[in-house]
Picture 1 (cartoon, rainbow, N blue to C red):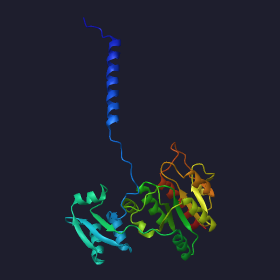
Picture 2: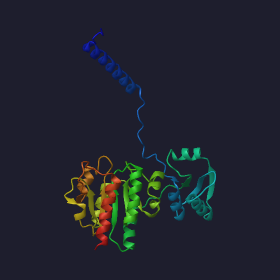
Picture 3: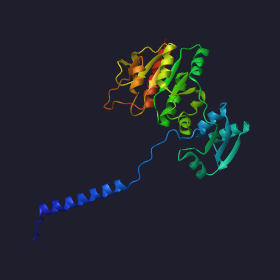
Picture 4: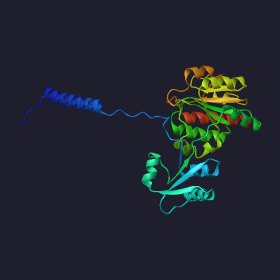
Amino acid sequence: MTKRENPRRREREFNKLQEKANREQRRERAYATPAKETNIEALREDLIIGRNAVIEALKSDRTIECIYSIKGDLEGSIKVALGLAKDKGIVIKEADRRKLDAMCEGLNHQGIVAKVTPFKYCEVNDILEAAEKKDEKPFIVILDEIEDPHNLGSIIRTAELCGVHGIIIPKRRNVGVTSTVYKCSAGAVEHMRIAKVTNVNATIDTLKEKGIWIYGADIEGKDYSYNVDFGGPCAIVIGSEGKGISNLTLKKCDVLVKIPMIGKINSLNASVAGGIMMYEVLKGRLTK
């Protein structure tokens, strides 16, 4: 006759195993090396990586110190980039993939890297003067603590396509124009004025004095983006990926604008929200 299994005994054995597993997890957490925080101020701004980004830099007036190109038979757009570099008399250095990987810290360099002088930021007045020279009403994007370089690159790319006269970013707690930003913008950085300011809120006050309306993209906004008239001089404020626009900056905005959403998720990626807002401004100006 088969011996009946005691259910209480089986439960005690299960509890012991569970307790042992919990102890091991606590031990692992206690001795685990804490994750390093990304230091956005330490990201390099002297490298441009990727074929399209390097080609755009070569077409511009950007000072390029040298080009690092992967060894071997080269085809396609990388040959175009090297041809432009030779025409401009820029030094080309061959490098193996390991060296390029180390320079780019694991980012996809597509076999070519340009070493450049760090990006030259402009002043806010330069942005306003650019609009005046085109005889256009100022169209500015203000970024509030955007830390993800992919988001900044995407915003710059969309801004250039939408006719934005310039972008304003804070000096602290905001990523600058790094190699990742350059690559994600597909070279649009070369055609966009970007100003770094010490105090975003003080800059907003200055813009208001010049007759520029400040629109903040916020879920608590009273008006939907498609109902707002962006025809006059305007600046669009886009908040950070996690926290959105800071409270003080929200209070500085003349109008808070929300983007219509009907799904279960009630937030958008910063670059997507920025893109929607910028296209609303462009659409309003084209249809007038």
